Image (cartoon, rainbow, N blue to C red; front, side):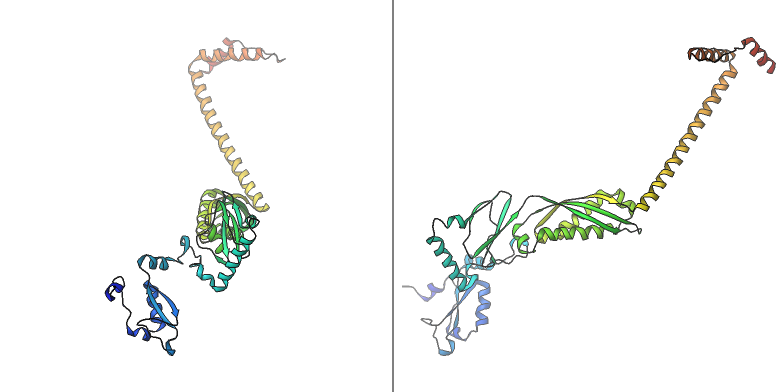
Length: 348
């Protein structure tokens, strides 16, 4: 024989005679902690019913494990704002009826229904399933084979492979008031199939538009020389901004590259003229430095020859040998070295 103490030893609270005096709000508040509410019309035992209390809310203790399961249902999946069914009861009575009819249809048309109900997704794909417009609990399905109920369930395939798209040339006014046309290429992939379907209408198109506006906004804060010289840093900054912005869409931006920077024709001519002038100035400086070095070398050679008469005679003979080896028609009248020495001696 069980006693009242045995019946209540696992309960956190007891049901008293004042249960009919509690309002529905009180019972629903208790249900939010550890209890499940239901509407009843006839309560046996110590719960009398009256015409005024035809619909009394009964709180039944479900135990710690089941209550924790009830509390955890409906949480955000993957830290994303995706509202899923709390349980199958969320579809309502009509949903249950349609589900039963779908199962009857599947069983009645076996095995032909298997051709419609069983679907296959590849290793690089995921399937997001909806039942009567509500996202099924458990997230995306795949890879492999999965089952859908005809008429009430639909699914969307999501490709998880890395995709690439070109950002069309964007006319940008730089910080130093120069108009340039810049295009880029973006590499991205879907990191969460469920979020990419449930949180945004078209994740791929939205990412393209966001990449265009982000490129214009970032380049508008840069000078022309920064755009031309710091493409790598601009690409890294743009990749970080896009990745943060598309995280709630289930998109992972892997890489961004600046392809080309086009300048106006007049600016190209001006920069070309400036570069040409800089090259000419650099060439003149190099030529002047060469003349200076050669003049210094000639002065040192003249000083050596002046200090050594034998060196002058050797230079004279080398010159005659070089001229005779060229096989030209030049007639040479060599002067006697003694005659030159006479002039050199007279000069001294």
